[in-house]
Image (cartoon, rainbow, N blue to C red; front, top):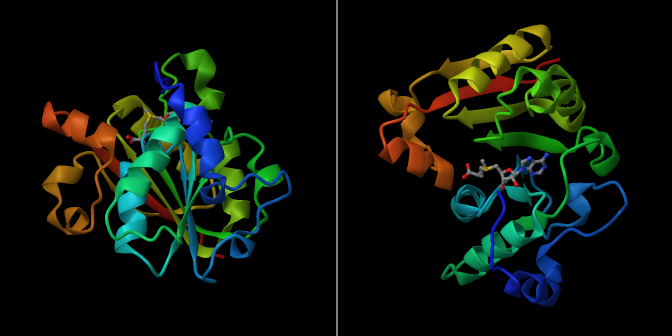
Length: 216
Ligand SMILES: C[S@@+](CC[C@H](N)C(=O)[O-])C[C@H]1O[C@@H](n2cnc3c(N)ncnc32)[C@H](O)[C@@H]1O
C-alpha cells in the first residue's frame, strides 16, 4: 500500500517515536511493553484499524503492528492517537519489511501472528513472496510460543487455496478454515474487520479465513 501526499507523516513519526520499535537488535517484546503479557504481531497492518481495535479490546495482550511503508505507519499511528480513551501502552508500531524475521524477533517470543489481506502476488513466478509460503510458515513456527496461533484473512481465493496447500506441508495444525467468514456466526462474534475486509465485504466479496496452531 502506497499513499500519496503524506509528507506530514515523516515529522509526525519523528515526534512520536516512543510508539515505534526502532531497535536494530533482535526484538524480545517483553522489553518494550509496560506489561509482561502475550504479544501478537500483525504483518502488513496497513492503516491500522484491525490492530488498533484489537489493542483497545484486549488490554491484557500486547500488539506489534508491522508495516513496510513509513507513510502508512504514520497514518495508522495518527489513527491510534486520535482514539479517545486509548492509552496506547499495549500497541507499538514497527516500520520493517517482513523478511528474515528471525533476524528481527527472538524465537518463541510471539503468541500469535495476524496476516490480514496480505499482498496476493498473483503471478505464479512470485509465489515465494507470498507471506504464507512454506519458508515463511517455518519461520513463524520458530517465532511462536507453543500453542501460538496464526490467523489469516483474505479476499483472494487463490491465496487462500495456496495457503491451505502450504500449511499441509508445514507442522501447523489447522484449527479452522472457511471460504465464507460472514456466514459463520461463531467466528464473526469476535471478528474485528480490517479496512480491506470492510471494502471487499461491502461489495459482496466472500472473505476467507484460516486459523492454525503450533502444537509441539
Ligand atoms: C493489502 S494491504 C492490507 C492492509 C490491512 N492488513 C488490511 O487488511 O486492511 C497489505 C499491507 O501490507 C503491507 N506489506 C506488504 N508486504 C509486506 C511485508 N513483506 N512486510 C511488511 N508489510 C508488508 C503493505 O504495505 C500494505 O500496507
